[in-house]
Length: 144
View 1 (tube, rainbow, N blue to C red):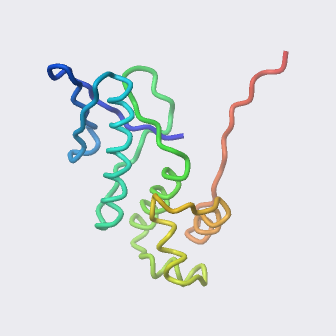
View 2: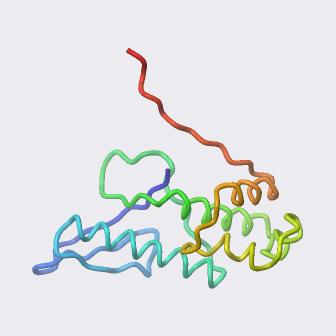
């Protein structure tokens, strides 16, 4: 999966939450658990805003963090953000992706809306179209 670091600072009776990768993320929580939930929500909003504005999205950590406080991205958000980052890196637009897939504009636009329930099949086709096939890595428990 993918993670972004959170920074929690006590602020009176609440906790101030920021995310070093996103200067625009600042939120609060009554306790550390609520602060982490609010931090993840703020990161999701920041990613959605950056995609909507055509701004870069910082790459998340893809190796499980060992120390610190981190927000784990939902899988579909990670895939949508990754597709966006790959398109930007390749200098391609949504219109280019639309032509590569032979899809309508709205179908492609939905791939980049974090609140839309895109299917894994749709994202898999989009990644293949940009030359980055999806790979899945699952750690299975060792047989006894």
